[in-house]
Length: 549
Image (cartoon, rainbow, N blue to C red; front, top):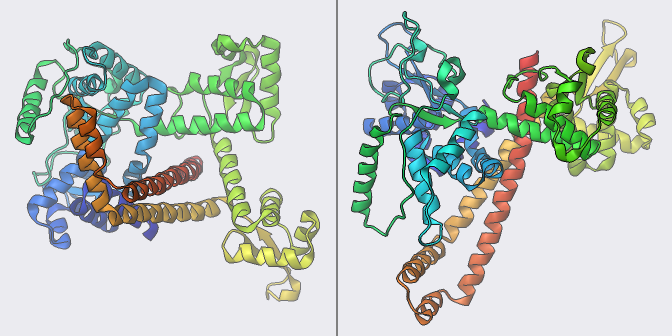
């Protein structure tokens, strides 16, 4: 793990969970699996805070626990990884995807589960229905059945899954799996859990929605004091055990979201390279195999042309001969988005997931070189990617660039580790006069290097955003207080003169400063999301290459 990954993970943990959790999480990142006593000794944090920090990390799936490596009876060990923490960076994208696919209800379901780590179905339905009712017109409310239906759709498409049972990895002798439950509390004696935690898909009821007796509608929350709010939250927790799903907790299936992001990237690339109809054909093929294809598979399951034709959207009205022509075009395309796997059923076709990701990663690398070093350097980089090994004279000739400029560009790319130099000696003594010097590009190491640069960029963006908000903290606090006063006055039916008087508490220069701050923060947020798209693409390519090798 690199220092840039650790730095970015630390910033994400501090921003979302606070400094204590960040200290414990950073220690686990750097030190690997450790038991409670070691964490307590090396971090210098009190036992109570370490336990609470581990509970928070386990609750959100960021920390994993397993029995100690010294044998039976040894203390439970806790560990984390950068992959688990970096999911936090993608939270806005998960929520936006749920909103796009399932509307406001799906958005709030995913948002609640991301905020709390895991919840029961009944608790989620009640919370989301109350939030939706709060934003509806007076007299209207959201029915629990509508939220429950959206929840079932998310489970049906595998965007949600049950948390693995607490002792699922114990391999019980009777072959049964205990009921799912929240993670064990840190500091308790080691449970019989295997070193590799069970995947949620490893037990049969992972995507089975329980029968829940839940009727009613969302309630509008009134303005209450903090103590009363805590009491009402406690009552809600006590009431949640009467709906038939107690002990069955649900979590977000991040792998399924990543699969959706990957599919959307491939569909978008096909649309840009060919046309919209081709992208719809690829979309249909991916949709038909999204649940049956493993996330690490190099290609989808083979689909016949007849199956694809029957599954195409009716609105496109594509005739069968036209579909055959498009499939042939996709198979013959140099990008190899689609491959042919057989001739039965009018032809068997697959979507080449690994090759598609490799081509997308290559395009990303070429774009990064062009933006940083110019179009001529990008031409040389692209030439080396295609020709694999070339001497300097060949680069000059093929790229049609003067010798002096080509030499400078090659050395610049070489100094940045974007291009590698390989020596091929004619004789064992490696004499320069009898050695070929070949320039080449190794795509995988270059992608890894660009990935580290992306981590550094996102960490810098987060630090800049935190600095901007810290500098204007007093003004932001004042703005929030005034907004709260306005909201309470509007709820109580205050006159317009009163509202205007409160609004004027912020002066014109302060308003201008607030607008400027919001503009800067929005730009930084947008930049974070854009860099995260590049991170996801490069990570998918690196992981796909590791899985296929």
